[in-house]
Length: 115
Length: 115
Image (tube, rainbow over all chains, first blue to last red; front, top):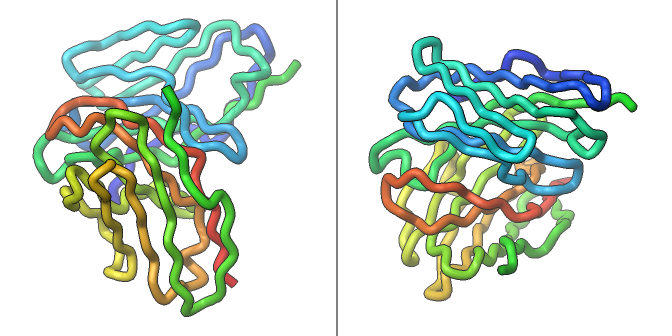
């Protein structure tokens, strides 16, 4: 089925280290990508997004990199904190009316932060 | 500004019954998208409503339906429940720019358990 794939199901990092979560997408026509964070018992929370005409975007402690050549997306979290522990999803949105309101999600990567 | 709200938060039903879930979008948002989240299939798009009309639909059987009211609130209905319908049902709202690149903001979800 449709899917944006994630390379690793679980990532364990030490508090204070930087985290990198990767995502491979399949649709080269997708023009918008979003990273979400989902904590237990909650809905996905927007972290950062990037359009296909960009290759890098920075937020507070987070950076998203987009490599359209190899259809790869990554989320970098600086100085990872225990509160960053959650499941992270990448999502893509394609162009055209058939993709209106529709995000395609990857399977998710669980980030575990060790104190 | 209040976020996306969903009611009820938890539901237990038996096979064959039907269920209605409700979603109130962020004020000013006119698009509501629904997703089903399961451990096996991840987050999958059900459908999107805009201006009281279904504008896009995912690959789910006709037992899954929805509607949207003039105040942009949306409901989804699942008839003849099956065990496999047990899932977290999430709604997300956005401005609704057709074919636009815009963020979807998620509610906390409704956890449905079918026995």
